[in-house]
Amino acid sequence: MKIGVYLINIHHTFLNDFIRILNPEKNEVHLFVSEKIYKLLIELSPDINGTTIPYIYNGKGIIAYNKEITKQSKNLDCIVISPNSGRKGIFSHLFLRPKCPYLFIDVLFGDVFLNFYGFFKWDSVSNFIYKWIYKRMMHKSAGLIYSSVPIMNMITYYIKKPTIFFPFNFFHSETYLESNSIPRTGKTVFTITGTLEQRRKDMSCLFEALDLLLKDTDFNKDQFQIVILGGLLSDKNQFGKDCISKAKKYNIFFGKEVIITFDTIFIDEPVYRKWISVTDVILNAINMEQYKYGKFCSGMSESISYCLPGIYPTEYRILDELSSSSLKFSSGYELAELIKLLTNNKNYLEELSVNALNNSQSFSIVNYRKKIFSFIEETCLSNK
Image (cartoon, rainbow, N blue to C red):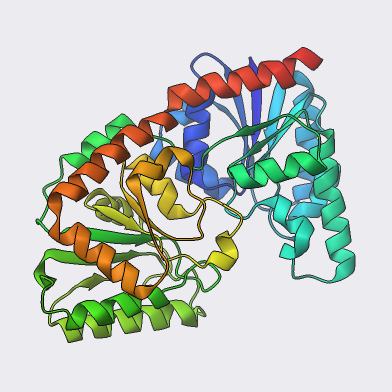
């Protein structure tokens, strides 16, 4: 089968998994990606250079690039298309008109569906144009791929197309075995993943919990550690800088390095993987205004990839498959109690970890390979 993958601005780890799911050893996979994403892909999987056919976008002339993709698509059985970010990128989709059936995929952290309902902050004319472009793309597609079950259920009311759920991350047995072989310090490590942006993060409950733990004489403060594994993304990110500054003050209060932070724009992949590999629990200090519709947060992604228990705000909609390895909090007090419980009760932490391993295997590459090819058969090939 000849399959095109147009994912210019997608996260490279998802794209790497998606390519593996499409099985380029047995299928002809054409990649339409940016130069930056392609370089990151090669770092993750050098063999991609020889097993796929790349058409690299160099960052200039997106309209001309999309016109060329339109020509290339006539030789494909189907193509998977994601929206480009930014005004110019969205407008360019008017010139992307595949000559083969296509699937519209929205596995970005910001779901396009939400853009119909005030997610855009631009002027009303721009909103109308971009909403119209997105709707046009969805209506002309053979099917929709979504990473949020609640949103997927909502969208079928408005757009009558076949839909399939795809997670943002997948289970890799080799990743689990690798992380499981790394020596541990004996401390319970709670890790917060994702960029320290105000629209994504709410650290208030964490700091409230730390205040309570600092005063708790029954809590063994030597047995836990918190890693804030997120970069600043920009030098102008005052929210992120304030979070890091406050975290460092808690290290002074505790008299030891209780919280690990990173004063960097981005965290390098090796550093990120090192810390996620020694994590015991993912702590999702997320802003529910951004994630109230059940969008994938980075913490839930890593819980799947690394088979880790997760702690989430009460209102967050976790996937059903992760319920037995997930805990929830609604206040700083409840979060402090969960940190104490998982630090003091190693048996309970081990039980959650075993559940996390079992739960993650629902998201294997093999499982989703079967699902996506059945979906392609039903939606694209049956219409040719």
